Length: 68
Image (tube, rainbow, N blue to C red; front, side):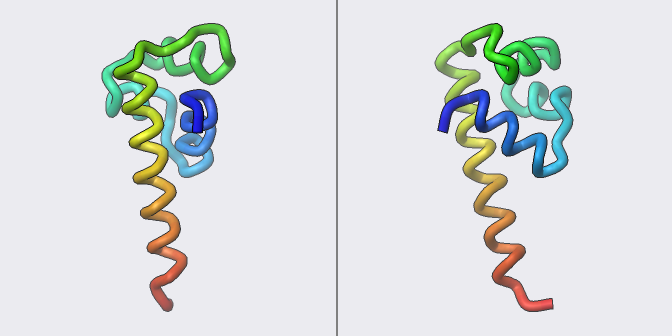
């Protein structure tokens, strides 16, 4: 997964660009530029975005497995 795809997954999960930025140590405008392909993230921010998205995907999968 690349950082741009990670941002899209997090947005689809209900997070705002501002909230994503706060979690990974970047500003909202930086997150927006990465999402639109206008900027490459630093290694640290890119890795944090992917890790956050993977964690969000796991949480969603666990919720689907829990019977209502």
